[in-house]
Amino acid sequence: MKVLCDLTVTRNQPLGGALWAATLEIPPAAGAVLPEVKAGRFAMLRCGAEDALDFRRPFSFAQLSEQAGSFSILYRVVGERTEWLSRAKPGQQLSALLPLGNAFSPPRDGSPVLLVGGGVGVAPLLLLAQELAAAGCKPVPLYFGAATASELALEFVRAFPVELHAATDDRTYGYPGTVVANLLADGLPEGAQLYACGPRPMLEALRAALPPRTPVQASLEEVMACGIGACYGCAVMTDGLGAEAMKLVCRDGPVFDLWRLCPC
Ligand SMILES: Cc1cc2nc3c(=O)[nH]c(=O)nc-3n(C[C@H](O)[C@H](O)[C@H](O)COP(=O)(O)OP(=O)(O)OC[C@H]3O[C@@H](n4cnc5c(N)ncnc54)[C@H](O)[C@@H]3O)c2cc1C
Ligand code: FES
Image (tube, rainbow, N blue to C red):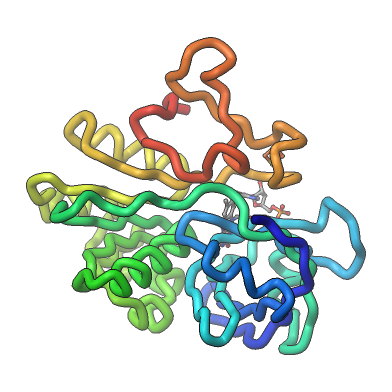
């Protein structure tokens, strides 16, 4: 089920650097979608005053409160629409189409789970940690890398049930280097199952570093225009045959088996 509805901003706060978190309330009439708000899935939010398709942008669900009928997003101000969003005050209505895309699949029983996030790619992993905790798992290791300490949103991230392993490229906090280097330095537990989201170079570095076929569910953050499979702007190539090889991140993803994606 997908719904088009007006969300209400109940909170919008800066977290340091260019990072912000917004809490968005789903109207009671659309409350039936709440159980379908899952880690990995996303919402297209209209970040602009006018009703133009160009103003919709994809954002991952980072936190869910079914009781309050709301979810939160973690976002980075990078351009016009995210800048507009950072100026939204509580009470602002945002037109949204949600929930879109597929979700992370639950881990196999007993496999050690590792989360690997780069930048705002950490957002869907936070909701995944929340879901795993609700299913009775103890806090899972989260390997989280950012360019610099101010881009780690530490206070926000620490509120989730994770065992945080932070890394910064400029060595200002945590492990001095990339998130993948941090993960390798600590070693991979036997039978580990990984969930990853971040820029493509991070995912490629992960693929290069891991023993082949280590299970990795990777969520992609391609640039999207429509979010509903209409524009083909988010196409990626996988190892399928012929036309089957092309997948749309918005419709077939954003979560893919890392080993099935063609290196870019
Ligand atoms: C499934 C999905 C989930 C996402 N979840 C989040 C999230 O939780 N938090 C968050 O902050 N962002 C997320 N993004 C990215 C977010 O949608 C973009 O940052 C946003 O659309 C930028 O809009 P803008 O108008 O501010 O910037 P624009 O003016 O559109 O772009 C500004 C700059 O950012 C680059 N850019 C735009 N989109 C992306 C992208 N997807 N990846 C890399 N570079 C991009 C542009 O090429 C340009 O250089 C997600 C993207 C996808 C596809
Ligand atoms: S964003 Fe238009 S097809 Fe995926």
